[in-house]
Length: 187
Image (tube, rainbow, N blue to C red):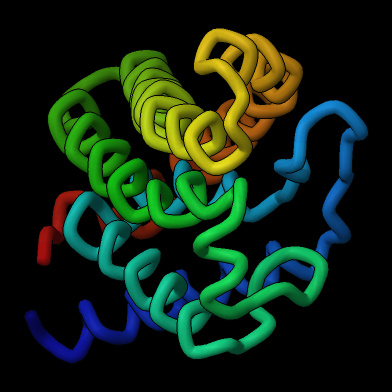
């Protein structure tokens, strides 16, 4: 890992923190808010790759754990990580890593622009939605005592917004990839 990698990790952690300035939207029937920070999973994985994207989120989780108010709504601390949304927050690092792995596999310089868009979108959905929900929903179920099926059903309300985030991340990742390809320069 070189200085460039460390700078990219810190930069994306800062971008994720900035996404946290967008106020969370709370829903009455599920204790996990809608935040813009989950789009950071898709952006980090698609733009800087698996290793650096995952490390950017591990750094964010460390900042949360020491109590810095870096999450949406100014939240931070171990209590947040132990709460209903803790599985999603901890799962961000794994989801960013998976998103990056998929993007690195499907998006290549020699593929067509349409294939690159499709690769970024698929990576965003697989890592940023499927993997993230696979970690966050069981955690939510365990912490709240809600049956797993009920927690999963309640989480379906987030899917349309997450698909929109995946589309935005795809556009941003493709634009960066076209102008300054960070993805192939793996850590």
